[in-house]
Image (cartoon, rainbow, N blue to C red; front, side):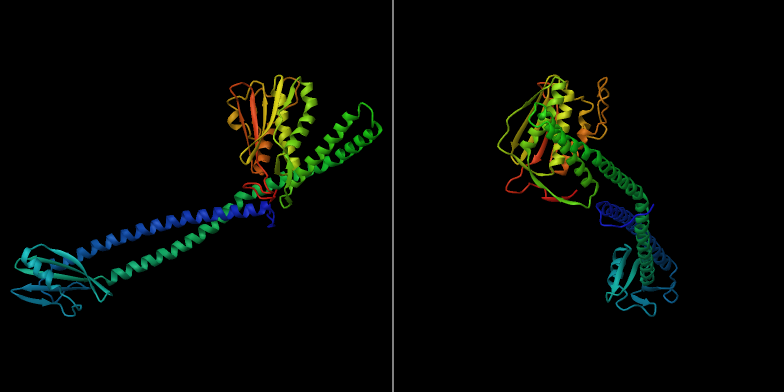
Length: 417
């Protein structure tokens, strides 16, 4: 399976996912490398410190005179008021003050002595009988060894970091390639299904219009008008699905009068409600309420709420439209048994439905309607909620940002669907 890098949202999503996984892998490896380097340096420092102290202690213990100290060390001996030192003693040494202190109190001392901010020496002074011996160790070899270790650790760390980035990108690519195929398959299915339905829908709409012209003025004309409107609504839904299948299509949002849309949806749902013996009650809402969005998608959301209410109501379904602050809300309340407490937390998740969702003889439900309502609400910067009021039944609420002065709070006027 190959991945063609284009400008679609899916391709950008995949690239961002690969980059994120690669960077996360690099950060984890980088933190691990830094921690290991710090531990290694601390271990080396501790080892060098112990070795240096042991070298100084050995030099003092074996000091018969100052003429033959171990390599890299110098000896200074105070005996009978006279100070003798190994030839080539570094400038600024010996540390006479330390010798005098040890001579007076007998407490051995170990100090680091820096000369000209470049060379560093470790100086140990202790008393041996009537003598005071001072051993001086050059720390430059230890510093060189430590610098080489840090350099080697840095080189290996950078190499490991680059390897981690490459490995992370490779693993990410292998991980997301199946996702690319799944997204492409899903979009092809939606596009193909919508496209194949357009031909019979066009024929249905054409025949309905012809039938309306023949029956114009007759009592059955209202039913035919409803049939034409339903066919037109179905066509708008298919167009919306086709646009949703192509994320590269940039479609500007349009002002939608939500009150009129709700009333049209209620009129369309009235025959089904009457057939089930359900009374549809619409409470008068405020003055025209405008939102910004896609009319076909919003109509699908309201239709799904009404369809759910009709299926679960016993005798009455109430639809109300209200405005609260910068939000407009559509409430669909039924007088049915309410929502199962086990289903309520995941009611708007795909394929979630009650175990006895369908009555005998009723068409099968797939648990998609309310999840689509949730997706449409999110696409419009809104939300959907469900609750079981104390008065009984269930209430589903669709909230959307209110359009004021041509602006929708928190939502751009045009987006990539």
